[in-house]
Amino acid sequence: MISQATSEYRGTVEEIVHEAYAKWIEVTGGKPLPMQADYAALIDAGTVWLLDSTDGLIVLVDEPDDGVLLIENVAVRPAAQGKGLGRQLLAFAEEQARHRGLTAVRLYTNEKMTSNIALYLAFGYRETSREVRDGRHVVHMRKDV
Image (cartoon, rainbow, N blue to C red):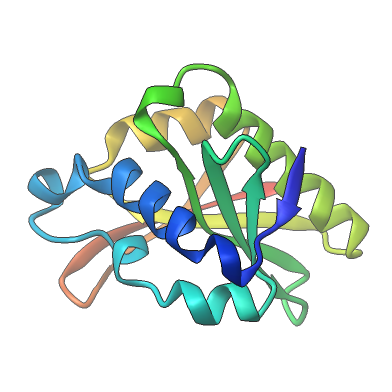
């Protein structure tokens, strides 16, 4: 099950994000953006969804003007990776997009996170563009739902 995170889970949310992204600090040359987010504000905004097992989460932001649901972050604890939880969270995002009357989901990632890019491609996402934003090389991806 996946439920909207509440403020009592903020510490758990921050812990999941830290565990999931710590390995990328050296690869990308700095803390990935999800490690710098204000999770108290994101939880209050109703955008953080947590696996009931507390092994993973997804942050979803409506972009209704574009008909898109932005996957701002998807994170799974390293000890729980390889069990299909990431796929479950991405499927949840697609379901949420359809439920909200949106036509696609999109996400972005650092181009140095090549294993994540390969995973998204395997799940049916396509690369739509690349850019340099604040010194970060960003790959934008999208999937129609």
